[in-house]
Figure 1 (tube, rainbow, N blue to C red):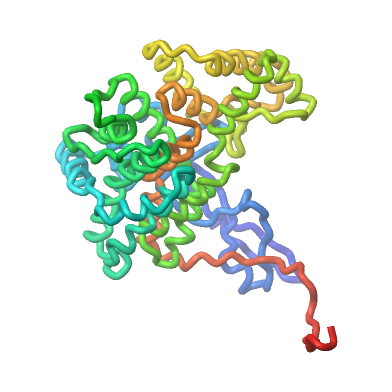
Figure 2 (tube, helix red, strand yellow):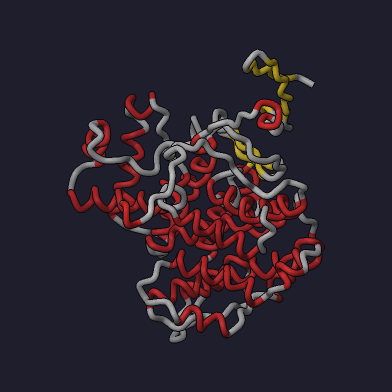
Length: 424
């Protein structure tokens, strides 16, 4: 086994080199503190591998994303969201019988306990849908206490089916709450994406028929967001799950992590930026000049992990063009987006810095074209990311990894004596 050597206080410490499937190399420091008394400091965990995982492979330099070995390009073109969900959670693409059993099990659990509507009714109409979503998901632990008390394989699978089944209902209900509309109940005659669109957009005063173009676009969007390695929310799910918290509690924590604007709010910020350009009445190329002067920020370009083009962005750009064309959408915001993209991709300032459009730039545009309001964008992200979170939790739960417990470097005051309040 290869090793790296650390020289400290006259000692030589051999640290094993771990090599992943795709030849990723890591220095194993699991025993570093025991051997040296040292801990490592890595703000933001940019250089730290917190776990071993077989779910998703990501290469930011080469722009590669694979779920369980399958290229994201193939899955987005040929698969559907439910098939990808099965792949992420169970490790392989399902055969016909497995797929039928999986989707049938989910349909068995789409109905939500009526008492959960009382929780929904307690929120004001102005409540952010992410707050509603995280609360409703967390409440499932109370409705199904065996999710903590009886963590057998069959019970874990039951909880997975329940969560996949009820999440679209919760998302649809959160949206209807914001409108003051009556909620819609699931329709098991529809497939997963059709049913979701029904609960979002159906009205009791007229018939609703899911548009196949919209269904196809939604499948692609959810697939592209289904997992993304050890990001903030996935790491949160694993951290909470390491305490043996229920699946529902762990996913609720992941939803809250995603709610943060630095993680899941980027596509919303893209639309807000485009709207700002419209309100200012300036040309996109002039806005880019303001970006160069650091007067404003360019949202939806560049990525913390991808140092080249985001592979998801290539797929979603093509889908975006098709959806806008097929739906015949005319929106000044969308025209501004196209102009901004074209200008940035031909500007040396952005090319040299590898600031290419990412998945957030295009996803917000498609969501807007589909009629999904801006404050629901992060909720849509959560709906897509659910299978990945479940896969990460399931993998962690089956492992022998200890409870997550990061170390720190203390920078506070040194030891001091207590002074009675009368003498302070």
